[in-house]
Length: 357
Picture 1 (cartoon, rainbow, N blue to C red):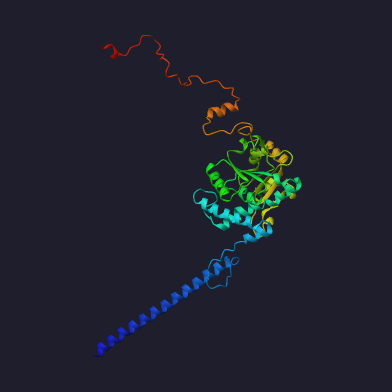
Picture 2: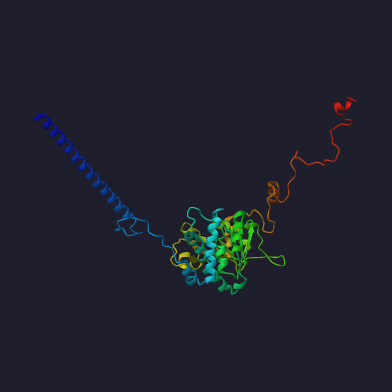
């Protein structure tokens, strides 16, 4: 019996020792996890100290701090409640159309992005337009063309803000213009018309008497390099008073190194609270023409020529550039009159089966 008791005691002691080791291991693991979690929390809080309180025990993303668009539009920019409502409606229309075609980036397609990346930067041009009307004292007849309007920016927001002006929104992508035209109709913008085509082939606004009128202001935002834009549309501006409003970013400040400080407007200076590196450069028609001439870029069509349609052939395009001085190539195929008798090269030809009778 003593031997059995000794065996049971030893077994019990062994089990107790094993249980103690397991308890110590669990405690050590919990302590390690706590230290690791605390370490990662401290590192994450340090990296994000500019965004939210690092002393918070639970690290959650901060709520998005959107701007007060209503106060910016009505107070800072001086627009009416009705115009703000239309701008807010425009935001909803853009998001709706963006589900069908790509008007703005779909990666962050939400109201704050449409407002802060498109609508408000477009409205910053109001400072330039007001200066233009002050210089020329003729705001009621101002004609504005938006070259490469894309999803309607800056043309539609400016048309809402300036109902007394006439706008032409031009783009070479037809499906985008369908969306822009629909949005203009939904917003009841009677001062907007669209044109599907290229700026270099466009003649200007068609008046009631059939003549074409030039524009007081042209806008260009995120379309192409400045020399290209100037080449495409320099002929559309009024010779003495016409101006181009050209949006540039920090990476493009080199193109404006010779510009006067009075010709550069900071977007974030016009729209308080908006974080933007964009600037609007105002160029007179003479400057636009000089840049176009210096670039050496040749226009594809003279502005007096007709807008090419989809059926224009490459041969016709090439012959126009050569001044129509082109001779037909040897062996060129030519359609013949089907009613004319066939010329087989000899007379009295008969088929074999016609001789059986």
